[in-house]
Image (cartoon, rainbow, N blue to C red; front, side, top):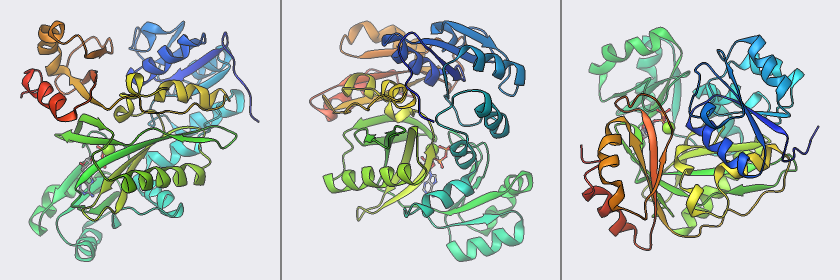
Length: 374
Ligand code: ADP
Ligand code: MG
C-alpha cells in the first residue's frame, strides 16, 4: 500500500555512512526528521540525525526500535541481512521492500535479473570448484575475471586470470564461496546511470556519468559522459528497463561498460544512491538524495536536469591532509567531507565537485592541485 510521508514525519535509515548522511541532509532540508541505525555512535549520518540507535544491523530489538520511531524506513547499503529486512517489512513501512536486496547481494542472481529484463551482461559462468573453473575458462577464454557472488566491493573479492597458470591463485575465492567467472570486457568507457522510481511507476534518470577508477575504486565522475548522445539515451533506456522490470521504488544505480562500437553491457547494480551520483548535489536541479527521499515518501519525482557540466573527484584517506592544505585556493570547488573519525588509507572520506564550462581544464586543475598525485 502506497503512503505519502510529509515534512515533520520521521525517515529511518539503516546504515550511518556517507550515503545515509547525504540522504538525511536532503531530507532535513524539506523538514523531515531522521532516525538512523548504525553500530557506532556519531557515525557520518548519526552526526546529522535527530535520533541515533546504536546497535548491530541484525539486532532485532534495535530494528524494532527503528520501526517504532520511523514513518518510513530506507537503507543506505545492500549488505543488510535479507531475512531481518523481510521481517521488518511486516512491522514497518519499507516501500523499497526486501527483494532487490536479495538480488543485488548475489552477483549471480543479479545477472539473471538483468538478463530477465532483456538487458545484456558480459558472458559468465557459475564456478564452485576447479572442474567448473576449467570448463568456464574454456568456454569464455582469457583474460577473464573471477568474482565472489557475495560481499565484493571496490574490487575486493575478485581476481583477473590471464592463463591457466592463475588457477592456483584464484582457488581461495571459489573455495570459500560460489563465484562467477566473467569474460573480460575490453570496454572503452565505464558509465553509470542512476534511475529513480516511485510507487506510481514514474521514473527519472540522472544524466549519464563517465567513471574513472583507480585501483578499482571510483576516482572521478565526469558529467555528461564523453560518449555519443545515442549511447547515453540507450544507457538511460536500459536502466529504466531494469527499474521497471524489478518494479523499483527508490534508487537503482546501474554500472555499465561501453564498448568501442557503442554497445552497452551492464556490470552491476546498487539499490541505493551511488558514489557516481554525488555530483548531482550541485550539478542537477534535484540531487539523487532528494529524489530518493521523494520516491520513498510517495512524492512526484522532479526533473534532474543538468545545470552545468562537472567533475566529481573522490577524497580518500590519503587525500584529506593535502586537500585541507590547498582548498582555500579553490573557491569554486564544492567540498564535501563526511565526518569520519579516522582517515584510513583508501577509505572514502569525502568528495569534491567542480562545475565547469571546460572539462579538460578542470581535469588539469585537479591533477595539478597535487592532492591526487600519488
Ligand atoms: P565492485 O563491486 O568492486 O565495484 P565490479 O564488478 O564493479 O565490482 O568491478 C570493479 C571494477 O573492475 C569495474 O568497475 C571495472 O573497472 C573492472 N571490471 C569488473 N568486471 C570487469 C569485466 N568483466 N571486464 C573488464 N573489467 C571489469
Ligand atoms: Mg562496481
